[in-house]
Image (cartoon, rainbow, N blue to C red; front, side, top):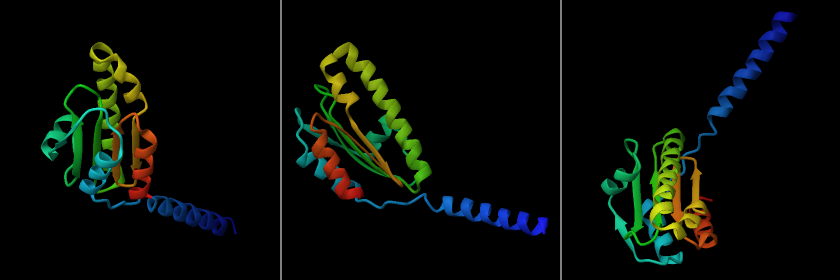
Length: 153
């Protein structure tokens, strides 16, 4: 009897563990479309320049197979957009950590050179849903959050 209860408990634990693995959802998003929507609909103080995937890779290490799109101001503000679609949620979590580190470095730079931009960086919209990571640095966070929600659900 004890063996049977133990086996049943072990089976239940295994079932819970396997179902937990299924929560690593993959969210497919058109990175260019989302980045463009943010660039067009969110209010930015300075003009933004579109970045290539290679340029984005200079700021944030992109995992193999990732697709990325982004925009960045010319240096007069901290405004920027970054959208990365990864192969899985583990890669996305790594990208999100890299973006958080990038934002911390940016805050340090802005404290020295453009202190008025620090608040914008501290209020940046950074979201991860499944395998997708999105960053939008703008004073217009409400619009950015709405657009991101439209694309990521």
